[in-house]
Amino acid sequence: MIESMYREHILDLYKNPRNYGNLESFTNATHLYNASCGDDLTIRMIIENDIVKEIKFTGKGCALCMASASLMTSKVKGMKKNEILKINSEESISLLKIPISPARMKCVLLPLEAIHKAIGG
Amino acid sequence: MNKEDFPILKNIIYLDSAATSQKPRQVIEVIKNYYETQNANIHRGLYKLSQEATDAYNESKKTVAKFINASKQEIIYTRNTTESINLLSHTIKPLLKGKEIVLTELEHHSNLVPWQQFCKEFGFELKFIPLNEDFTLDYKEAELLINEKTALVSMTHVSNALGTIVDVKKIIELAKNHKAITIIDAAQSIPHRKIDVRDLDVDFLAFSGHKMLGPTGIGVLYGKKELLEQLPPFNFGGDMINEVTFQNATWNKIPEKFEAGTPNIAGAIGLAKAINYLEKIGMDKIEEKEKTLTKYAFEKLKKIEGIRIYTPKDSAGIISFNIEGIHSHDIATILDSKNICIRAGHHCTMPLMTKLKIPGTARASFYFYNTEEDVDALIKGLEEVKKVFK
Image (cartoon, each protein chain N blue to C red):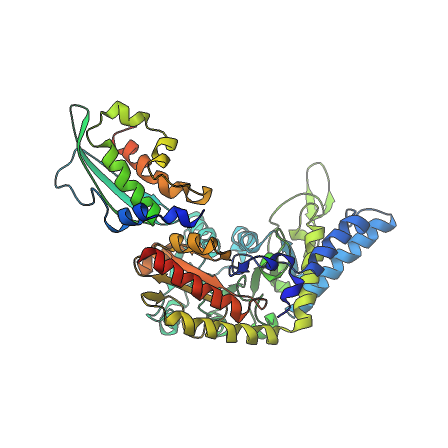
């Protein structure tokens, strides 16, 4: 079960993250640090008319956190603020399509938390 | 060595003894036996059973005292190393002359945060003996940092995060030259090597039972008798008093003055059994065996491509490392799927990790019950981790 946590698509996202990088100008940003494992995530986005026009992340973390950041940023791009705020933990976890052990939940949920915080949720 | 005495080790490869050791069946038995045949509150009951429990508790203190070459009065039972250090940070003020406290950059949060709070409350300043590039302490810098302004030097004996062994004798000598009080956090050293508080001439020494085969919830604070007598009590309540009126109270003698309320009697008895067990093997033998095993592991780990080791060569029992491109938590999760238990993260030493510019490390830690086969399994496991991430 554990090895299935490190399936090809997760490792691919870890090695080739989507939406990774900086935004020169942005309207919303947040930086979160998961002290227990050292996952470090900065999310920057441009919101226009309550819609996320652009979103990028930088940071360092474990494979699960980085994969989740890629998937979450892709998901919310183009979405309305109030729709994004409705995304719950289960939905965020399900994006990874792998079983997540309790010890690793925090890693997976950090991007969602950061996105919510950045848009003021 | 003696692996068959540890029921839990049948199914796992346990390389996290720096977090907590496993318990031999002899210790588990003595705790069970206490509750089945001796359980009563101590220092109170006038019946035989209470006397038996009291005797067993007192006997435990004698065992601990003898183990570190102290006297029974100098042994205070606490919950763990953390509580032992907190006891000191809450009571030690009257002993301090000077306005600076010196620690090392290696400290676990438990020997750092209490002193940060102390400094904030009393206007003291914190100083840190830095690390060298090779993860040993910079003793030259220690000579400068410890001076006439130093009130207290509190240091880890062995770093839980890196495995660095601190030359505590050298530091104590520096501190004594300036009449500073000294404390050793022995949580990571006392399970693995002989400690003699008289020989070290240290003022206070703190450790936990659970890292040395004992149960959780029992820890020790050793203090020199003449110093303990000068400290005010830590907690107030039963057992720590001599006489109480509605308006006033006087204190019991040491060490009872510092042990308010019903203590962890079963824990104390379990700890004594753990010490008996360790002594039966011999601390010298334990140290030697772990040294050999650590060296074996060090040599094998070194050969893994992309590995970075954060442990000095002469460490005993702990090896901290990272593999390029793989987060330590991913390493630990994949090893767990092979029933190999290691620790990953910042090891409660966040400032140290920040200094090393890493979020954390993977850490394998050994005890005498570990074998070369355990190390081989770790190496094989790490190769597989690399395969997953290649």
